[in-house]
Image 1 (cartoon, rainbow, N blue to C red):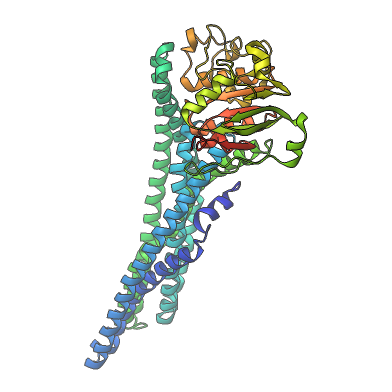
Image 2: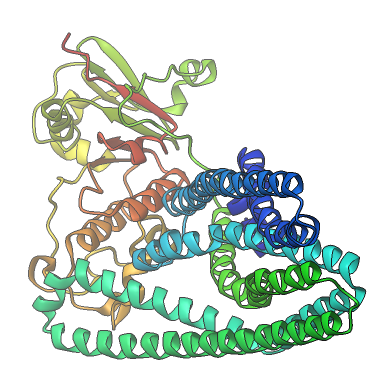
Length: 542
């Protein structure tokens, strides 16, 4: 969905909704057709039953009216039910696609903006289905009325065609500004949502930095800009509505005057005049609907453009990665992946071996290995890798050397396994990471986004124990520090517990693309889904 057309197709016709959407459109068209047939039936009753005083013809005419009203009611019900389901499913499909990209791929859009795109923009775009249904029904009504008027008196049909074309041309000529203003209003609203979301999630940090009042001033400014953009869009839409009503009213008046003149001249019968006036009144709504088409397209086009821009950006940001990670249901157990023959037979490819309750686990070089276990076991493994408890003989082997013989200092020279709540020191962000900064590793830890928002970037002071950073920002800083370490094995214990799901998915993809030998001690499905292999030890005690 990288173009506006693809976005509209997904929102209207995608994923098996074509039959239901078509049924809804047919239902609405049948409803409009039945509405047009009502004044036709009334005119026939006047000419064929009332004027000659034929009771049999009157009975048949009334029966025909009953059938017409039954079709009118039933077709509307069918169209509305099928259309509601098609719209809801289209909106859901767009929302899931947007959130899927946000969760599985790398995007620099703020969470608030992603929320706006996946909610209001998705709803607006999926609503293009109602535009298609309404316009198809309106076109059916106008076309049927023109054919009927052509039978009664061709000048009336010509008047309807000319009036419809004039209305469409006039409204379309002034709708370009509405399209631009609608897009700008959606863009400003998304920016305001992004700002408010950031302020809400970082309120504690803003208070610690003394920036709450400045943040409030910024929110007021952004809110005023968004309100002004929305006002301009609504003002343009109101002007277009007034113009459309005026033009359709003039067309209706012209048809009525022409029909009256033809009736006075005896060219059409009284029943024909009643039919012509009834058709003119009936198609007034469809004529207005046809006139609204440019405005409706303008409204939906802005939202579809924003979705297309987002999907194109997310897809381009993913090209550098190895591909989307496989999905991992959070409620299903994750089986341990068996080593391939090449890995099992080539000791040089194995960085470490671990034995848990007699079960051997191998950690291959350059891979991300996930270990899922009960919380107590996860903590015990973190202490083992970090040298905080003595290993049993053969329990942990680094390369070809047993950790028992390495000792604590030797183990820490080979393995970097910081505690889950590692310390952040007073000083700058750069001083808390490494002497030489690798920006690729900043991107892998998603700390580059934090740096962009800090006034002094890497030179920004983080405060005592990192109190000027939020919990998620501190975790990303610690992750960046871990990726800058020289040890050949990095062990991370629940490194993303304070990070939002979208950023967590970015971190998972970044770790998978790092090429480092990493062990993730975690129970989080998003992280485990990015691992090259996963060992599930939750049943090891059984």
